[in-house]
Image (cartoon, rainbow, N blue to C red; front, side, top):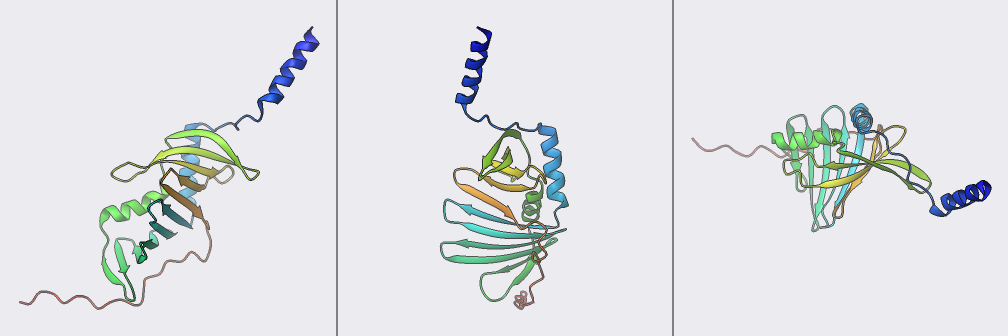
Length: 192
């Protein structure tokens, strides 16, 4: 009877199919994801929204960001270097002070909060760690599921039903952000 019971138990396990891979503990994932993102010398984030809005942002440490935005056939190029922004809607860039909330929002791409660790996900033969996060912006209105590399703890992607962020090209030497050379002349000041 014991042999038959063991056979039935084995059969039940096999019939149940694959079990989700074990998730790591929250404190470990928080620490390792944060450390990995802060150790990155550079990376690219491609953001697409269900509305058709898209942004490709290149980050180069310590504080350089180049974003190319596209929406409804219109484009905008924004370069942030520290607290200085260079904005272009076409040929020339306009130099201006970057609003502090814009600088903070860019920096938060390295500080993605890990709110909850989820079961690992296997896709195309590869196992990814997963976590849930809430956007770090002032509205905290985006709830996302992120995957990360189980060896490096670098974020692979984050998404929800209307938004996808794909992280790529970590530490690629071609990820360079430079000060634009084609600056528009400053606007004339008010007459005295």
